[in-house]
Image 1 (spheres, rainbow, N blue to C red):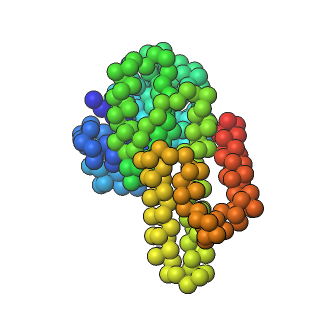
Image 2 (tube, rainbow, N blue to C red):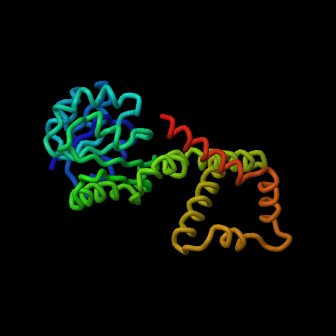
Image 3 (cartoon, helix red, strand yellow):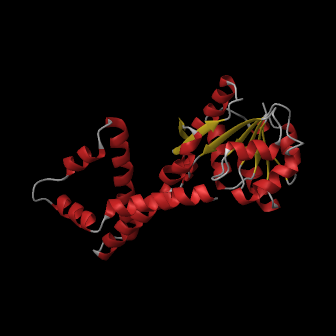
Length: 265
């Protein structure tokens, strides 16, 4: 089985690294294309995979073809490779704002089996969260192959396509919100005298541990929050400030803006 990537940016490389690390594929099973020789050299050196400047070459041999380019380049890329794609290939898109109907019409190839997915950047450390939506003509066994590849760098959830824009807001883009939150906490710790490197480490571990606690216990976030808030304690005072500033409403507004933008792409 040959796996091809059109686009070898950070997300594609995170996916490739996860697949190789889990032993699901070997370097000989991979081929990727990019716009610049520098990008190709970096991928070839890191993963010992075949690379090329020719998108059509990738499409012609790939049993599973990942489209890992920005949404604004989809039309151009699909026009290049639509006739070159291997008959019956699985085509997996990782772009926001490009639905299954768009992809099927753009390719104009009923034999191609298209899957839409949305990973996020924690895939770089094999802690990604990927939502997946297959077209109706994707057989269950083919879907399972793709899901196994995606699980190599994190968790995977099947979602209906109507929720894919919501996925962008809650998962695809949300690492940026978390990094902003971490940076703000660390900035104040620095203002209080803590070295910045230590502040980042402690803030990041607190977020990591809190997320793991939620996932492992299955408890409601409000219940876990209450466990930290002692009567007349320090934590409830911080929570009070966040609530007075509209913290939850601001976060909801941010997610709404992200979802809306994804729908408009």
